[in-house]
Amino acid sequence: MQDTSVAAWAPAMTPQTVEALSLLRMQACFFTGHRRLLSPALQKQAGAFLMTLRECLDREIETLFYQGVTVFYCGGARGFDLLAGAAVLRLRAVHPELRLIVLMPCRDQTRGWSGEERALYEEVLSRAEVYCLQESYDSECMRRRNRMLVDLSAVGITCYEPESARSGTGMTVRYAQSCGIPLVSLRSICLAQMEAFSLD
Image (cartoon, rainbow, N blue to C red):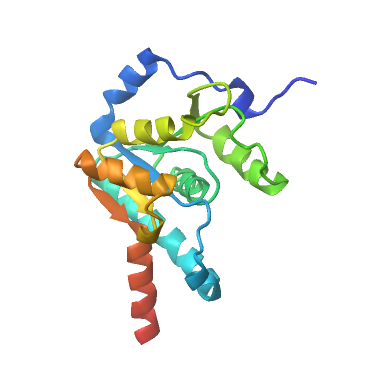
């Protein structure tokens, strides 16, 4: 049976594509965040945090749009990546100039995912521009994808727990900082907003 998934037919990333996308760097933003959005400390506030996170995502994407950012990159991972990608697609109904570009680290990225997770992945990818970095998983493909997200962008939006410094998101954040790329910390913004609401 022929595989009709987006991952199966997405074009491979070529040097020519990288060069073309590099020309858009000053109009581009990347997303990076944890696959598990809720730390143990946030479990009791899960509903409030996720609702606030979606609101903050929409607001920050729109803020960047009005500053001239129209290209948004995500890596297609579970958790924050797909949440952020869905936010761009949602706002594209209002701002059709928005482009969502997914950089797949490998075609078998969803190996081990649940059916629900794969369905969301396919839904987001089916409405985005998608490029695949390599055919199958190896120990370097995620790091290579994360560095490319940063290299093609002028700004980043993160959902990052500082105590998870050794995670892929942590390494991506540090790499972006070493490149001098400004980062918007959604987790900090959300927690501050939730605290402000609780004091009202």
